[in-house]
Length: 369
Ligand code: PLP
Image 1 (cartoon, rainbow, N blue to C red):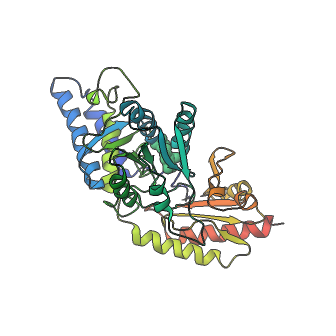
Image 2: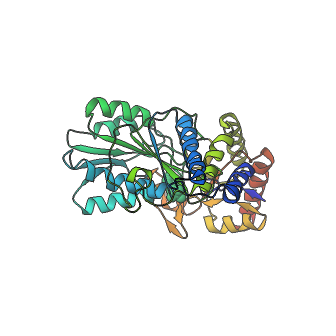
Image 3: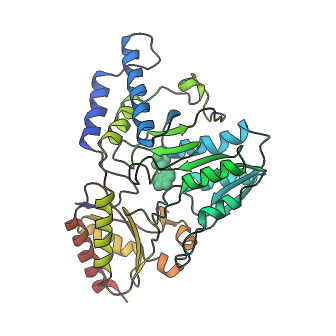
């Protein structure tokens, strides 16, 4: 089996499976309990927070959630309620994940002005961060910019945006969906007031995510209940999943050089095939989006699946529904229909890449019209 759909989700590390099952078996207390079992469970949370802030290289609070979707919803609906008098303008991008874009639509209905900055064109790179910064004014409540785009791998310099926004309007809160960059881009290069993270994209368990919040940043909670996590996210903390999340962070190796080499290899091999268009630019090297012109994505995806090679159709955010994000990156509709997204992991090898390209080559011979 060759799994190249790691932007969708990842195979849990063995160490993660061990950490989760050991906690479930031997450390199942409720972190709110006053006895020793509660204290042991609480320690799991405390240790995991230190692991996450350490990996980010930031000082601040960590809140555990059910995933990045919940984190981003909490931020996007909670910040406007906590800072009612800071303005009505929200600056974001035209290529956010639905977990940010759909809350933005709701905020627009509620009367907020949403400014969506488009990515730079492939042949005119640069200037994107400046345009985001330029869109911030005295009335700007919040900026929300993703770190790495999940479809093309496009990287935004969020720290640059953060620093300039704080100089221009110190009241503006900067949020970042860092799901696809966390542990994959060099660590400690991100800066934001609020950050969305997810465990299952870094070989941790599904159903557990986190919010990083810089000291003093406020938001109204999304969930009310037993008052866990200082009342900011009620609900019994899933300490076994939290242990798994921390273990995934500890276990994720530095793959920057590996991803760069594999990405070059993939691009070189693809350049030997007819009618390939590369859709990614300024991208994280673990993600490559390309079009196999003349063969629809789903046809190629299922052809590769027969060989137990798993990729994603490059333009779909959920089953059968295209997201329109590729169009934002200048990919014509006919190429978007033929797009394939390959996303790698620490498990990916050169022979996986070669088998993929061989599969695509055979697919082209069989299906291209
Ligand atoms: N943001 C990005 C960029 C993603 O790729 C995903 C996952 O598809 C999410 C957010 C949602 O994360 P979760 O599955 O943890 O809710």
